[in-house]
Length: 168
Image (cartoon, rainbow, N blue to C red; front, side, top):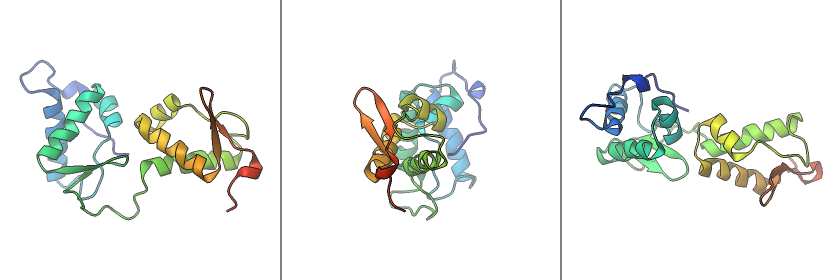
């Protein structure tokens, strides 16, 4: 995750320049200064919401503004990155949903999350990781596909019985 040092109280919310343009300009400055290099992620919509105290639609406008300036590109489900589409990203970058899934899996293996008991809900994971609902759902689907968890409609997602865990 990429946390900003710019704060919401520094925005001119009453002036003629829209808030999303002010935020986009700050991120543009970081890119031009080399603080955010080619292929590196820019702050997610969820991170922008928290850092600047803005609505999700405003955060989306920030990304759109930066794309229109040719500074970033977006990969569905992975984030927005510095450069043009196809700009190589650092090989060590694991998609956020896989990082979340790995952390939940580790909690299961350590015994913090036990078989046939609920894991933290979507809202809690969204807040904990500062990501979109789709990212959390992608992480849960990843864990389900591997056999670590199962989902009961309208009840939640639970740790699978130990015998269903993948053989590592």
